Length: 115
Length: 117
Image (cartoon, rainbow over all chains, first blue to last red):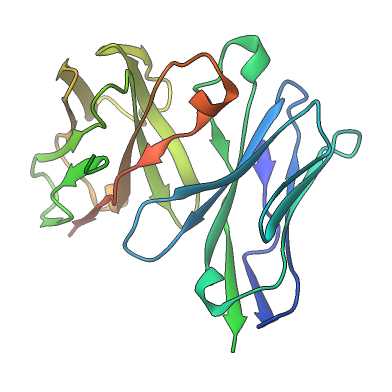
């Protein structure tokens, strides 16, 4: 039973355009969400996070949106750059319950930004 | 800091052999995690430690898998005997217990790619 789902295994976007990566979750105990980026032959690296008390968090070209009622979050990258080409993992945790350490990851979305 | 260090980066072994993967967490981090990445299951948590003590090993797939953390700067994940279905990339990650949301941020190593023939 996948509690965090990334239904699009891949996404291709033209350089300069917006990339939108989506993530759905089923566990209502999740209240902290993160996005990680992974390049080939490297470990995932933290990109951006959002707490359930917010519906938007922005960091430069990256913005994460959270829709709690729909149990959906998305990562927007504007403008997309070829260096953004990587696998993006969505992750969630029940921070407030004290189980912050137990991050549940989605299966990832391979983003390819075409020059 | 050099980050989370994992070794070996690549391991090819034959079915039935023992495999030991090693991890050195970031100095000062008191949480250590072992994850496995496969095409079918994505990134799944195997086990995690707090202050060298195993807290949750419910993700360890079978008794063939074991993990230890003898001190704050070293952990091992052992598979004995190994099977072809164990082929995957194994990641070690660490984090600190600052009590803030930022504490959720794991720092991953580069991973150990295991191939069991």
